[in-house]
Image (cartoon, rainbow, N blue to C red; front, side):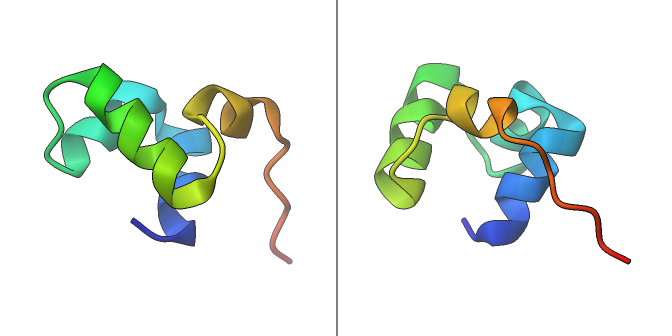
Length: 53
């Protein structure tokens, strides 16, 4: 996973990104996401996505 997956999460949603990365169990995706980014997907979704000009 990379920064792009954080942006994708904000645009595509939690389950869509999890499935794109091959996770069929959303809890396991959440745990892996938290270990990689040091925040849960729910926290990412609460963060505004910066606009790219």
